[in-house]
Length: 284
Length: 309
Image (tube, rainbow over all chains, first blue to last red; front, side):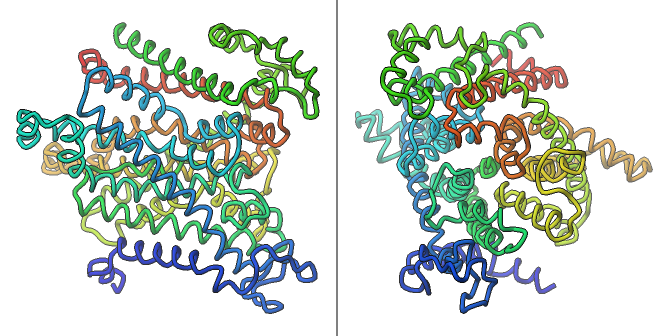
């Protein structure tokens, strides 16, 4: 009963999600100050220490590195790569969606076909393709995640612009001879701002998941860096003796993704925006 | 019907062309692909010879045309680690992937049907009705590789019920299939639940109840009515399934096509990576075509409206 009160009252999933998200970002920013150890410092005398042993609050990994410090630092890459990818994909997709919905004609035809083809392909395959033959660096990683994200923005913005285009205030601007690019920026862009914000929140959880998945496969963050996805992969071989090395970073990842999803779903419901499919969040 | 089939064949050809062009583009984005195709430690002379043998020294436009021919004939450079036709290596691994994907799909269908029936057919609200959907939300938010690691930890390490990796016996199949199913179930369960609720609110349901039909029978009719949207989602899920195999097979060392591409990458066996990815992408587009055609077969409305638009 308490539970229902919590959900029905002021505190809803969105608030909880936002709070956890802020907490994770704050801890990540403060990590260099509050982490008890250097995340890369090895203590070979105390490898695989259980939580609480030898003064390590959450134990150590197979190289004797303090797990708590690595967890605090481990969100930096997923958040940074995720945020940059969302920014790139969002700007690119929104700009093209705006152009296609406004200009229509051949531009719209070509761009729509490209998104059709791309949305038809599993994004992990696309990412593998680019990371195999296009080089492996943080910049490429950001671009790959942005590349697999932009069609969602494009589609939503395009369909919204198609609807807005026939509204009176846009017609009025156009008949007055306002240049097209200015109509697009001044009249249409504000109309899609909320939609893009909601999409970006849900896209962040997709981007973080993808970074983690690629790092797990050894194609994202590289050892010895502290990165949640990579840490799960490094700890998997130690499951038999030391479960915490793989299980704890994964839990942090789940907390991050769930909070972004909760916030995103809450925002999209409040704005009455068309439901942004969260299916995209689980390709890896 | 013929127009419908032709239209979808055309769209598939465009998709295959687009996907293969993307492969070609990425392959040539870093200059001469022979640098990657050559064994590690090859000198410049060897690379030049390989480049000539594979035709990478000819004009790009010509290569673009021959590339399609090569792919259609399954003519890829030989795998470096296996010393044989790369496509042959890929095809050898195919049965394992198909077994895994089909099992996962079956598990997902049963799980989605159960979750959808439970929360779609119940009156009122709250936790008693919604808990399967919360599980679905959770399954959607947990990365696939982490679900795999957790299952290995719980069932393989703690309880020692099931093997943690490999492909021997039905027990070894269960955990990877379960992991893969976790990724496919959520959208399926959501759509089924929502359309079931929609069907139950329609007049024919009320008529059935008024006529004294049993609850089970009413539900059966409503479930029948919610099949179509659910099957559509099932088709769209083919991508998640195929993409998921790459991750899940790697977690469990399941000897399939997905794990092959990752190990090939680790061994820097780029000819094999190329053959594997090209195969996966093409296979995926073809599976989509079959799903679209089946969908048109099931629902006459689809073939008529799509022919008109």
